[in-house]
Image (cartoon, rainbow, N blue to C red; front, side):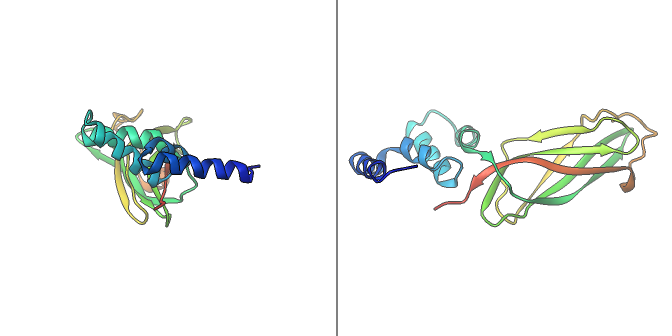
Length: 165
C-alpha cells in the first residue's frame, strides 16, 4: 500500500528531475501512449534509429496484454493452386491502441489449428487493419473445403497501449 511519504518522495523526485526524465515517465506510465510518446521523444533525441525502427522498439517496450475487443471478418482464398487466409481486424475499444494480436483458425475437417501472431501493428480505437496468412499447413491441398462453414477463426492475446494524455 503506497504511503503519503512515498507519494511525497515521488513528487519531490519529479520536481528535482523536472520534465526531462523520460525514463521516469516511461516507468510510471508503462503500457500507455504517454510512455510510448516519451520513448519516441528519447529515441529522436539520440538520433541513432530511424523513426520506423524507433517505433518498433518503443511499441515492443511498452505494449502490454489488454482486454480490447477485436472484431472483423476473415476467410480463405484460392488462386493458382494455392490457398491463403486473409481478413480484417477491427479495434472495437474506445481507449486502447492495439499493437499485436494473434489469429487462430480451426478447421472442422482437420485436428490441429493454425496460429499466427501479428506484431508491430498500430490499430487505433475504431480503426481496422488487414492481415494475410500465406504459409498455411494445407496451402497446397486442392481438395480442401474453404467454404465459410468449414472453419472458425478468432483473435487472441491482443497487446496494446491504453490512450493516456
